[in-house]
Amino acid sequence: MLYREAGQFKSSYTADMAVFPILQDRIGLGIVLFIAVVIIPYFGSSFLIQAIMIPFLIFSLASIGLNLLTGYTGLLSLGTGAFMGVGAYACYKLTTYFPGVNIIVWILASGFFSAAVGVVFGLPSLRIKGFYLAVATLAAQFFLSWCFIRQPWFYNYNTSGAIEVPTRALFGIPVTGATSSFTTRYFVVLGIVIVMTWLASNLVHGRIGRMWMAVRDMDLAAELIGIRLLQTKLLAFAISSFYSGVAGALLVFMWYGSAEPSVFDVNLSFFILFMVIIGGLGSLTGSFFGAALIFILPIVLRYIPPKLGIPIQSATVDHIQYMVIGALIVIFLIAEPAGLARLWQIGKQKLRVWPFPY
Amino acid sequence: MRAPDGPDVMAGEVLLSVANVSLSFGGVKAISGVSFDIRKGEIRAIIGPNGAGKTSMLNVINGFYQPQEGVITFKGKARAKMRPHDAADGGIARTFQNVALFRGMTALDNIMAGRTLKMHKNLFWQLLRHGPAMVEEVEHRHRVEEIIDFLKIQEIRRTPVARLPYGLQKRVELGRALAMEPDLLLLDEPMAGMNIEEKEDMSRFILDVNEHYGTTIALIEHDMGVVMDLSDRVVVLDHGIKIADGTPAEVMKNQAVIDAYLGVAH
Ligand SMILES: Nc1ncnc2c1ncn2[C@@H]1O[C@H](COP(=O)(O)OP(=O)(O)OP(=O)(O)O)[C@@H](O)[C@H]1O
Ligand SMILES: [Mg+2]
View 1: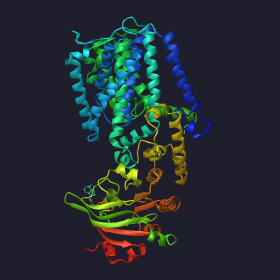
View 2: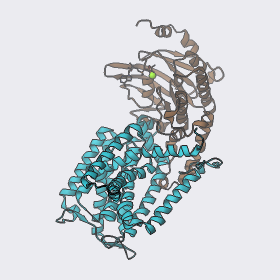
View 3: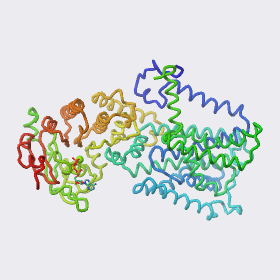
View 4: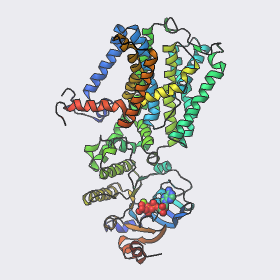
């Protein structure tokens, strides 16, 4: 009976409508935040923070973005990588032209550029859905990839064709570039991810979230209760792409430090889509689970065997990684389409009634 | 036949009229030159054998289909092309023959979704989910809880509707339509596949909605007993043609109706 909400009466609808109405969930969230904000920055190794936490958080944000579109609104997109690219390139161009402006402002502003691009490529979604829409977003992916590679303006005519993150300081502390400390970058990423997750959670629990899910579950009935399909779908594209754009900008400015156009190719789109599927379509918590599994599992596979004295070649690790992730996706699609988020729910449900088996 | 409010409904003002409507799908004529009206405050039944064009008629009324011919006048306004969301804006709600709920959402969220048109707080407030957005959410939650109490579905509030038995799904779907506070409620076989007890409950709800909220109802139903009990007037379709129109008692005596139901060759 560790996980009990007995006796927690909801005295008002406001309390009943809280995102985490159960006390234990709120405590759990508090502990997770404490670990993320205090424990990890002060006790975590540079490897943990730089190579695991920063990218994990960024991929979680990208998964949340795609989940809003695919999981909540039911619109399958294979263009996430490109929309992330739009964010990264927009941020790069903005800070090139206006180096004096706070880089965090530009990271967030770059989201608006990918939101605009997302809306344009979302227009066909009124007429087509499912597989055909996925193909249309794939076209967006290839078109934008082509722009990043072939249009030198995007990468400031660098001979390398890559974008290099310049050093930008905030209150005298370098936030991006080679001289910035990983702890600073971690805090910036963490802050943005916490705030944007909170906003997404607010959105999906209110009127707009219900409109999205209505469109996903039964678009005819949605129209019948007065929902305008095009506006609702385009809003989903806009907000989803905003999240992708910010994640893309963070990916380059806070993690890679520089990026070739190939970073934002269709593989990235699939990578994020797998996170959403394994984590759970239509679950924000699931987006974190999915990002953890898909991003961290390969790292574990890479580092654990040598520690245990098992000689294993990195090529073999790569193969194992593909096989494990492929198998997981197939297993989840067949056995638990609602993903890790659903397993988490079931686990909590079991704990709630424990030790009684009903 | 509901004697009490019979006479004044008879004289009542017309809420919706359908004049000379024809609808065909390629070669199939689903509706041919049908005219009838629905008066404010009445329960109007639409009956007819399978494939008579009843569902198609509702689809025309709420804008899912555009008729090739004919005029539809709602609240005194003859309308041109209209999309279903315009019908919703105008105050028409509807349930479907095969339940059309949002299957991944809870019963509560399904009914809350019915309030969409009545909620106006913009994206900014929705993102914060505090202040005005929360005030609005609570206000509409109160209305929705009234509907939940009315339909006696308190226990299944939090259940995803896909897991509910059919009878309860139909009830939630009615709840979602009621949440829109419509002027005209279209019900497509609300009692199909229900047992006697469930049918009685549903009949009660329909009568209560009509009496307490004054909602005008158009109802498709195969069960003649239910039609006799609930409706003020009945329109009978067969093969897309209107063959009778009148009080339940008149319609039951009509030879064309008896023939249609007995399957007399045309
Ligand atoms: N979308 C459509 N495309 C083609 N034909 C259709 C379509 N919808 C209805 N029809 C045809 O129109 C005719 C009337 O169908 P409708 O569904 O309106 O009948 P109904 O009176 O509701 O019957 P039931 O009692 O079986 O529900 C039928 O012949 C049907 O096959
Ligand atoms: Mg029908």
